[in-house]
Image 1: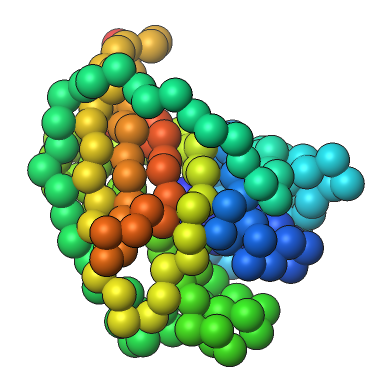
Image 2: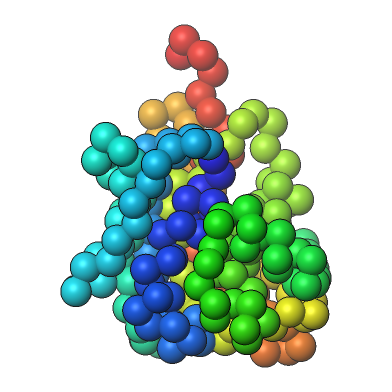
Amino acid sequence: MPGVIAYSYLTRPIVERWGREWLEGGTVSVRFLKPVYDGDDLAAALSEDGEASLRNAADELCVAGQAAPTGKAESPEAAGEPLRPIVAELSEAAALTHLELVGETLPLYRRERLGHPGWLLSLANDILIENIRPATPWIHVESVVRNFAAADWGQEVKVGGSVTARYERRGHRFCDLDLLMEAQGRPLARVMHRAIYELRPPGS
């Protein structure tokens, strides 16, 4: 399953505890440690100190995170390789499709017509694919999200930013993206998105 789907599950206990406060000003950093597969039984949890986790039926830690209901000011990243922006509409159909895809039953999203944070993070994948155009299957490794506002159904969301780093580890090629997501000129979230965009050749 894509990392953004696992992330969607991870946000369940976060939003259950902090609600709109987190959607409009909270933070979370997540690392994807083990693959999650369709049909897996998964358990998402949030400790008292904000440690978030997603575990499979074997109690293996698949996603680890740290969340807080409010964030702190961040220093801008150094200028990087600019990305071509993308725009996506958070239509009612798109919002409901994502909620159904991840089995989200918290009433907040439907009652207040808010976009799910997993849908928003999926746009980081979209801008990566549009600009980096990976030649091999690619892997979502890590994201750091700072929320500023909740996305409303019917809004167009613009995503822009830059590639702040490209580097190699153990033969894999990584990229770090610094992204800003906006709707109607209002910032929704800032995301550091890390991925392996080119896997090392087999046998190397």
